[in-house]
Image (cartoon, rainbow, N blue to C red; front, side):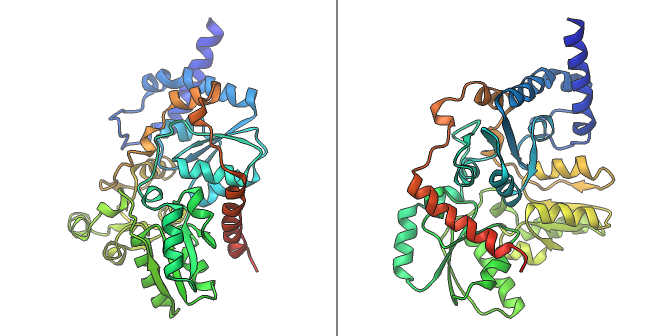
Amino acid sequence: MIAIENNIEAEAERLLRSLMHVECDPKGRKWNLETCREIALLTLEINRLKKEKNAVILTHSYVEPEIVYGVGDFKGDSYYLSLMAKESSADIILFAGVVFMAETAKILSPNSTVVVPDRDSGCSLADSITGEEVRKLKALHPGAAVVCYINSTAEVKAECDVCVTSGNVYDIVAKLPESQILFVPDRLMADNVRDELKRRGVQKEIISSDGTCIVHEEFDVAQIIQARAQFPGLKVVSHPECTSDVAAASDFVGSTGAMMKYVKETTAPYFLMLTECGLVGRLEVENTEKNFIGGCRLCPYMKLNSLEKVRDALLAPRPDQIITLDENLRQRAARCIDRMFELTSPA
């Protein structure tokens, strides 16, 4: 009994060293030793299950901080986690994020069992278009290169020529030989790609579908103007899933990983992060000397992940928590993602 209590206390202290810096916890929790003790038994159990089952947990930066820092083996954005899935030799990959990300892990690691904590963790972007709708768009634009943002389902990836992330989209689209690009599913990212390529002097016709991210589409320029007036010297950092007006008014626009790098390397009295609140939590933990003002928004899908659901999915996953893909579809989707890796590899 004493040994168990000592283990819980040591685990609580480990958790506190990270979580004490998180100021924008969506549940209103203030991380202290007591709240860390409350989750320590769960994180100990999950980390034990990982070893027993040869499992790895991939955590997107938007999920709850106790998942990221308590049990996550790898944390990051879609591109980094795709690489980790591709390189994984684990028997089980648990993806704490949303379903399309877990599908991507299954595409890249077909021999692993891939599970999700909550099958309802969808994505407004990924769910905005189907494979059949992509085929109809392709029929209307037969000469176009078909590019899908990684925030798309496996069946959509299977219909596309190349996948992109918010970190490599500009470079990949610029490299494609086709002058006409069919871009799915993000209309706002397509607008930003169009603007950036024009700035670079690259001539491309960008045709897009009409999906948007329910988090990033909500930010507006008025919010930026108000924040700049209140916080002199403020740096505004936004994501390419925001509107082109917001992107134009920002000091930096980039992927989740690029935003983290920018904040780390930039000196400023304040930062306004126009993205999901989970990333701000990570930034607070990993950049304790920086000041972040309010402005982030929550993704309801990402917040469906919890330590309890992670534990249950590792212990005895239900059939609906296990990602299965038709092998022909998986191979077609894999070619789309592999093309992304090829086009982002050093020459």
